[in-house]
Length: 273
Image 1: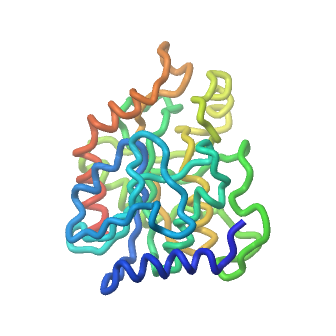
Image 2 (image 1 turned 45 degrees about the vertical axis):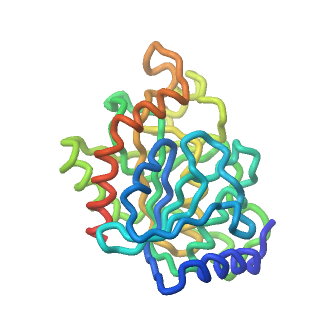
């Protein structure tokens, strides 16, 4: 379990590396979506291994580096690679950077992920803005002693994802793709893809997409009173939706196919916020 001083030590280390920069926007880049890092200008790159208390990213498609620089003239921090519960980290470790961002003065958090489509209207390559979530099958990221410096013991999560930011992102996605989706993201612990029975159950409960990240980070952002917006790239249809087996390679292939659209969507969104 981390205490406030652990987060403060990490924030101070990063602040010393980026003197003169004052970003207010942070982006977490999901599986295969790290291509946005190529668009960051005047950048400073810090390997996660250098930062006190930071875990290391172990998943293919996650570079494991913090990038501070500019996109369209706006200063940002980007996590090129995130941490997951299924890697063996507890949820406090997996979400550690989000609280560090709060201490660095970040006000708006953009979360991206690769997800499986449950909603049968989706096709691989679609984008879904997340407007709510399910996480019945995972422990709470806020389990344990509350850190009062970040937020209250019993936070309200009814508006975890900022409505104004989400609307702007949906409009930009529609401009670029001609398709507009928002919906419920189901968080599952992984690393196995979900079973067909689990997908049927999640669909019955109202889920539109499923994945193994994002919700713990969004809950921490909400706890810290940071505005949060999240988007899923539907890289595959979930188990049982189509008569085909699933693989991480499919996720990577779809992310590669839509990478240029993804870059333009996020760049345009940053201008708007």
